[in-house]
Image 1 (cartoon, helix red, strand yellow):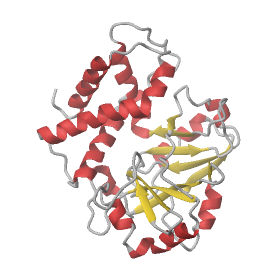
Image 2: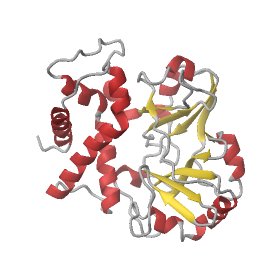
Image 3: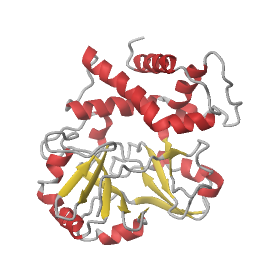
Length: 310
């Protein structure tokens, strides 16, 4: 029986957690990185539909951007709900682009041509692994058609092949708008610890960091370390994503620099840094001794500059 399981953390292809050379060996499925809110759906053994966000199971009175309320009642998802009830071992993951059933689209999400819930992956609890795209696409054929389809399927690509997709990624977008980035799946890859991993390149981050050599000497433990961490792991793309999360959660379309939303934004920016990037920080900076009060302050400075407050 399926239960709540958060979606796998997608690693940057320029970080040390992924052995990029080995990761890119074999068949690589490259998908558009949809710029929405991570959403999860599954059914229990009693035929009850459950929903989740990236970090928690949802409830009707404790929803996330109205995803659960929509998913559990809208007629367009009824076939998918029936599929999950018939397959209680499967968890469906997707990006919630909202924009349906009266829900608002905030920030860059408004650019998507077809809103709603888009499937990006499926996990089999019994087998303990993510299903290949070809498998879950076949399972959902005739049941649900909003599936993030591969931009291209490579065999033994180079990192440059992936980068070249960034400017030609218009999945579910107007032709003059490029997607947030590219997500790469090698379903056969396992790292040296036997862990499955998924990689990504975010367009804005790549352009922002393009001139930075990956062979730059790792900063040693010293004054300014926390500043270096924030510069390395909090990009303008991260700030925009965080701002958009607040806008979706609070259900408003245009950003407002009020004390409430500034506080929510800064808190979320720091929380995401700690919860999503700490392992990469530890690896990249060689088990650094971090003053978290300083790190938080540096993160807040970066966020306030992004909002034009400094």
